[in-house]
Length: 341
Ligand code: AMP
Ligand code: TRP
Image (cartoon, rainbow, N blue to C red; front, top):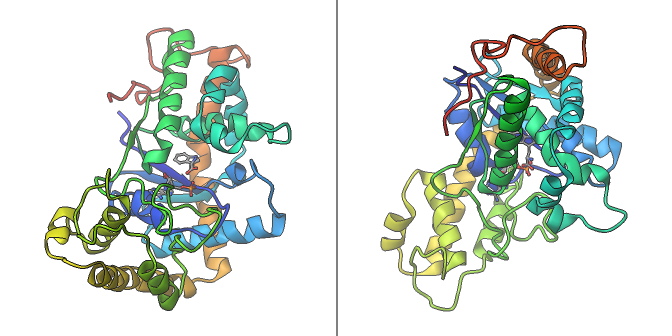
């Protein structure tokens, strides 16, 4: 059975610390299992953007993934648009997913709605399902905000297998134990995100140390004045504790018991985040565009064979090619047995 993992990153802005703790680090730490990481540039096109900036951000995202420890000797790293199979499987899965399903997705409810909304924003979770199902994936390490999309992926895979025979592996999402949804430092009610309205509460991986320190020292806490880990009632302080915990490998409750004031907690957090990001920034600045392009090209080549085979299998099962599907009851490949939850 497959033990492959996949995670994708949208080049809609510079990567931020939520990406790192929610997905990049779990991906990097688990590379002894077969791992695929990709720059989700097709997903970036669901909202308006500039082609030149998209190209630059795609390279930057790939470079930061490498600088963060994605190891191209083991892990496949590629750019989504270099693999046409994503778009092809996306369409086939649009013929499995329903309008109601797509319409219920939280991200569409939050960002979409107006008549000028791109149609792709509605269907993007189906593209994400295609990204995953293309590669016979068992595990999808992502932040908590992506859970609903992986649930949809599971539903589509199971529906398809029921209708057409066992073609897809059914994946499951995994989330880090702490900071699965890192909050914006200036507004703990919203998640830290690349495209948040203000960048005051967003720690970008490439922010210089003085900027990181300033943003952390200005983080919203609360008026109680006491350091306690209580995400429900004290989201601001608890978010700082989670940040310090993930940066130092400690536990937020234990850190809370060792701190009495917000000032010292913020200073410790700033020191830890700066120390965490310094080597990543150094490695990133040592990479050339050519280095990154080479890794991406080799990655797309390595990813293509399995992806093309999945599309061929899917088309055959749907009656779209002259190839006959695998006999009912016999998996098309030994790896198409649905993974358990
Ligand atoms: P995106 O920036 O939307 O492409 O997200 C890429 C990955 O980072 C996904 O797995 C997200 O769930 C994760 N991620 C983004 N922001 C956060 C956050 N604030 N906390 C935890 N994970 C996050
Ligand atoms: N939708 C994800 C996000 O917004 C990015 C993504 C696209 C992804 N395809 C994926 C993540 C496949 C994991 C697996 O963060």
